[in-house]
Image 1 (cartoon, rainbow, N blue to C red):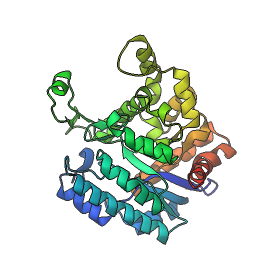
Image 2: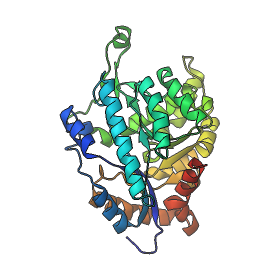
Image 3: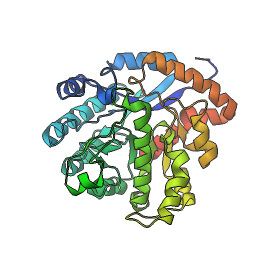
Image 4: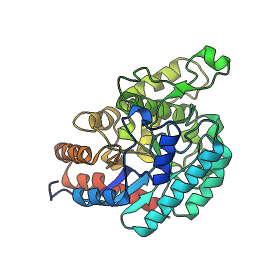
Length: 343
């Protein structure tokens, strides 16, 4: 990369401990979300990529499908969550200047999650990672209110990551009490991350607001992935529709959502942010550059892909931002957010 570009803090990067890789392959996730394989990963590989691309620190998290990988098996989820969080804690202690981490929780297991939160905090986590849904239970569902209330009380930092959409998927299925199924119309044609990850992020953004969760949890700080996925261009749609048509939701003013974007929510730039996607958030919604942070999505984005996308980003930010603003995007915004997390 160009030597004149500033160092970066990577808020969207993943780790896959050996036990987690084995569990995915053993329990039906050898091709997670339609991807061709579970990526290999090691701390050494990660550090080598960081050194090559001038990434000073990576905030690690478990990616999709999370740690609750077998519907109904809370014991497996709790054990896998504990193993992953302990691994991340130990890694942070070994490389305190290079690695931080967002702890996993065994959602939708509320009891197990409430038990894990204080353990993870005591071990030094820097926040928590939630998938957009856990076996069809979406963030903002009342079932998860005790967890959000606990994290709000602790003024926690929450990183949201998309996963495969799941739902009963029809009023009839819901009325019949049918279990959620994967909602992937393009399964076998496109991997879920290509399109449906963005749509699931948009679902969660609207649900967190219209369920009242964001308003009820003002101390909770949230990082949305991939510049908010498909949510920015849909903002006027769901806020306007929610006011015009009565329903079991809290109607929102668009201006109130934008204000929350400026005070309570941050966005990572992982993926294909340039040349077009970033403009929807900046100019369509009016989110300031102070809410944006670098993300690589390694190793689910391969090392050569991370380098390619960073090259596009280095070019793109020079067209949109001045030198001081680029410093903010690449590391200062994350430094400020993580410093808040340490107070």
